[in-house]
Length: 136
Image (cartoon, rainbow, N blue to C red):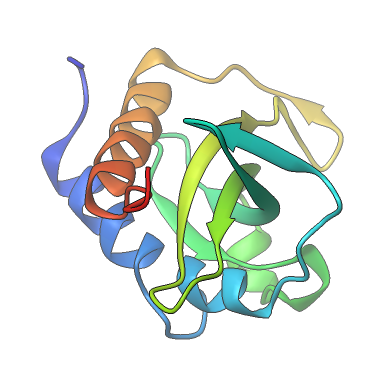
């Protein structure tokens, strides 16, 4: 994929793999898995949703549910979601199967640039390579 920024993608990956406050691993570890599932290579995996906040360049600043995210992070950020398939085996891990980038911010409509989309898409692609479903 072209048009992404290596610095932004690497920063996003660190946050996506983080078990610290604001990290995706911590959030997904706390989320209850829905009744929905996805089939990947013949195996069913339950789904979890990871809410995140990002800027106009596609730099992810925080993972968390709206009500628990600090106001200074929410201010000026856009909201997105990753739908992740969960493997709950001994080596629990997730694969992002869908990305949602909302086109509004506190009621204001905004455009999502190709640059922003490229940074988030490349972050997801690399995350899935690093944390791909091992059983698949």
